[in-house]
Structure formats: C-alpha cells, structure tokens
Image (cartoon, rainbow, N blue to C red; front, side, top):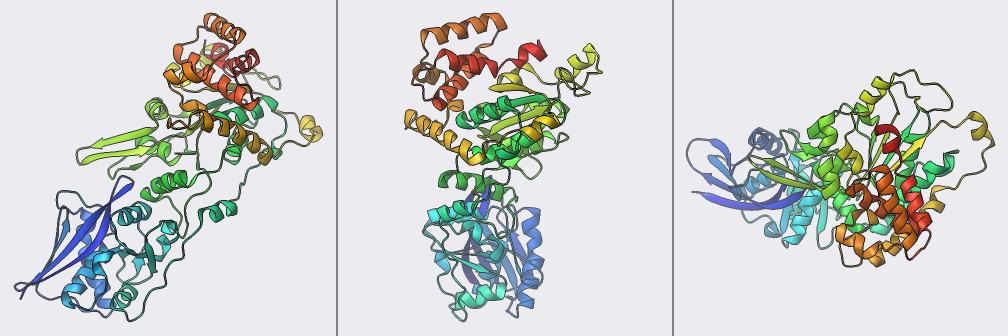
Length: 512
C-alpha cells in the first residue's frame, strides 16, 4: 500500500531563501531511492548520507520504492540543506501519526554518516523566508542557531543529531528553544580593534579619512612604502556609524549565503573590511563562478573594500568594479538563472607612486625612469579614477615626528563628528532612499548642494584650469557638501570647495 508524507524546508537563490515542499512517496515494488524535482549533484548524493544517518540513529528506513519530490519542481535545488527535511519525510512515511506540527516546521541541515547535523550556508536568508511564509518553528544545526536568533515570529530549535530532531518531533525529548538576542546588546559587545590614536602624523590623511567616513566617499591614498596607508584604511570601520538592524541583516545575509560566517556567530555588528589580494580573479571580486556566490565587492556591502597595491590588480578586474561602485549592486546572469547581490560599499585604495615606490618622496630618491612611472600609473584607467571621490598623497613620517608627536585623537572622538554629519544628511535626505552624500544623483546635486557665489566661481575656475570631467565636477560638489556638513555650514562655502579640490589634485600631478 502506497504512503505519502510531507515536510518543509528552504532552498537558496542568491542570498534569499525560497520555500521547498518535500514529498516522500513509498510504494511496493523493487527497492530503490530516487530524488526528483530538479536536484543538483550534491542533492542526489544525499541519498546515501540520509540512509546511513537514519540507520545509525536506530530509526527505521522505509522499504520498497522510495521517491522524494522537491517542489517547486521547475526550480533547481542546490546545496545540502534539504537532507534533514528529506529524512524527516521518510520517517513520517514509515511512522505516520507520531509527529507533531510537521506543517508548521521548517527543517534545515546537512546529515553526516553518523547522523550528526552539519551547518549549512544561507541559514539567515532561509529563516527569514520561513517567517515570511508563516512557519512557526525552525529546526537547524546548532552552529547556525545564533545566526538566526534575531528573527522575530519564529521559534528556533538548535539540534546536534537526527535522533534529537526525531525525539523532539515525537514529543519524547523536546529541544531547548534558542533565546532571542537583542541587537543593541550585540552592538554594545562589538570591539573596534584599530584606533586612530595610534596613527602618528599624517594630518591631511587623517582629515581625508574623516571626510570620507562622514560622506561615504571613495578614497585613494598614494604614498611611499611605510607611509601608513594600510593602517589608516584599517581604522576606517571604527569611525563609520554603527550598523542599523536593517544593515546588519543585509550584510549578514550576504556573508551567510557565501559561507563566510564563522560558526556560532550571530548578526554582524561591525562593518565588514575586506582586503582581497591583488591576484584575485574577476569572478571572486564581482561574484559568480560555477556555483554562483557573492564576490568581494558584495561581501564589503555596508563596509569597506580596501585594495592595496592598486596597480597590481588585473586591469579587467578593476574595470569590472566600475558599475557595482556606481549602481550599488551586482547582477550575475547564468543560463540557470540570475542572482543580484548588493554592493553599496566604500572603496579605499592604496598604491605606490611608482614601481620603486619613492617618486616624489622627500625621504628617498626615486630610481624609476619616466617611462616606467608612466607605464605603472597607466594601469589605473581614467574612468576608474573618476569614480574615486578623494585622492591624497602621503609621505613617510620620520622617527622624530613619531616620538615627539602629541597624543592623537582617538576613533571615538572622530566618530562623534562623523555621526553628527551623518545625522544632518539623514534629515536632509529623509524619504529619498539616500543615506549619505556620496549617493547623491545629479538632480540631488542641484537641490542639496547650494553654494555661495564665491564657492561656485572657485569650482568653475578649477574646471577650466585642471580640465575636470563632469563626473569629477559632481564628485567635488559631494565632497564639498560633506566638508560643509562637518563644519556645520548650511551652504557650501569657498573654504569647503577649496578643501574638496585639494582632496582631488593627484590626477594632474601623476596621471596628466
């Protein structure tokens, strides 16, 4: 006599989940075990793991011909998160009427041959989907529990083994409910590891970092080896505003889908700081690959993407960054479908001024020829430079300056000014889906970047003198707006424009 049982799980599409109905059909005839519903190779291979996990857990595996359908059947199923739900469907078919709340429960988890539950990637996105579709319970591996502990409207039950899940669903030994975690408590526990107070000297670079943080601007630092470019860049997350709950969800979703979250970690509360090596491939930077995953530009969403030794990156990889930096998202298209990943991040880049690293230095003479310098700098294209709002030059700080330097401002002090400027921007752009000055579009420039007559004249003079493109013209306006916000100027004044132009003077010095 044929038996049909049903459980529920979730699949992953990009960073978002989608509900999957698992149907187990047991019929007489030749013994067999088939999984249908457009499964990937990894899903098909789960048959042997499921059979072994049920056996070693001392639970009955159904006899006869077993057919498992994963619906909707026209959507490809990737990954190993379906295995727990398939095992529970088979057990429900073998032992009908012994389980509770099957229709209200989502099962997530990979099974080992010993019956252990293994963590899965994308648990947060799938948990959000479960809550949105009205499921009340979520059972998943213990290593994924903290990741989903902030989701409202969902009771989360962490488990270590298939047997524990079976005993919970039959009522023999209920699992312990995962307590809800307060996002504000997570934020208070966050630790900033790189503090600006340890950066000695470099007053212009420190000021540029503050302006970049206050307005969300991209920044290029050109300087000799050892001038402090990397150290400054690592201090940037510590002066950026704390993440909101929505930003934390967005960021954690991406890292969870990419399998980048450490085990037993909750929502991300510190803005990401990604530092890919310069030999990175284009799919690793932008996203894609055989099994589509977010790239570094998306893993930096709501944080900082730091590219050290910028000219050493492959030219196509750098050029591919132009659209994500402009649009704030990446769309990866494959024959099997399309995935879209957010990529609203700050680009911070560091580079030497020449191959030997000492062109323009007051400390050490440069040994490169003019043609070598030109060839080195030409690796950075004009369109990419156009998308970098601020460019500063740095020289080394002497030992005497470091030893005799007075105590520097710490990150908390600088962050307070940044937060004040960001608050002005939030009030100015309320309801416009704009979060900082760097995201202003052309119509916004005309509306929100009002200048005094003298400031406007200085900017127009700079356009004529330095052959500034219209994109650069707009970016100077945005930076000037941020400098004005830090100085609490209602209109952009001539001093704000002068400083913004000063932060944009390297193209004429190096690239022209």
